[in-house]
Image 1: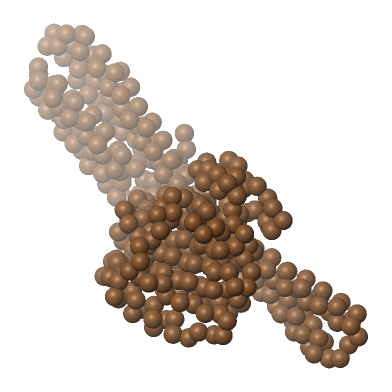
Image 2: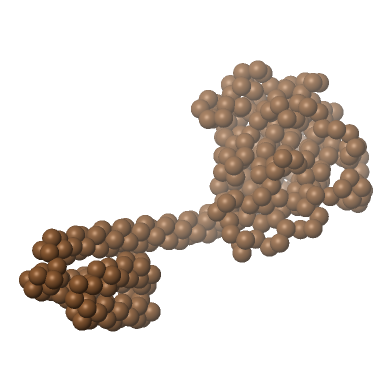
Length: 408
């Protein structure tokens, strides 16, 4: 059996020092067995118990362990055989020799299995780290290679549109501009999908600030009645994944709304969860779509309609939430439209050690007055027809927010 641990780690200087210490102790136990006839039992078992204790710590090479076991078996076994031959011990006591050797073999076998498993975990972790780095490079490269020619092409189309043209030529240029816009949206979705697969680093995320920045960014490109009610505080997660999640849900809401419709983003916390919702007043969800989205196993895809895209966006969002022990839900709010809810635990995953995270911020849960002040400061500007208003923080969150929700 070969372990995947490196030779440098296996049988290192510190491990060999433990081996020599055990061998000296086993020799001392053998000497005690020889000088105290009839009292061999305690010393015999101490020699082997010390091997079982130190072998897993020392991580000795298999050849070193076999040599040590053979020496101890011969030395202690010889004492037992001599005592049985002289009548001090019954011959049945010599059965301890093969039985103890078998027991030690099982110890060695299980420790070697553990070493193999540990080596595999280390290899997989290194491979995952490399994949994350490759994914990050791919994201940057893809973004540059796609966005740069699109930006140049759009610049030329806009320049041509400002020149006088025949109506038919202007229609053709408008088609080109529309297709470039569509290709830009596809590029954004591709970048978002890649980001959703990455961003696994756990950190304390200011959810309210992240929602505010997201709304400020989207309100510049979509004429909707934007409403923000951010009272989520901080949670342990990935800011990059949450940002990509919000972008996916907002883009989904934009497809089902028009100018004059409202899109509301809400963040709240309670019972160890942070809850982020994106609600819109658009054409809404059907009962079949809600049922498919709330399918915890994710076995069924939401029914398609004329506005549906690839259908991968919500699947990625669900995967993100489930990876953090949360879930994605859908509901139809009282006034119609669609309501999507992402619930994620506040605390870091069990696999994250305290050393991996800085101390939790003191303002992890802000009171209403502090939250209102922060929102007022960040949402001071109001571009024409693209306004965002901080919802009344004292107003309770509708019960439907806890009933389940999502969009396709």
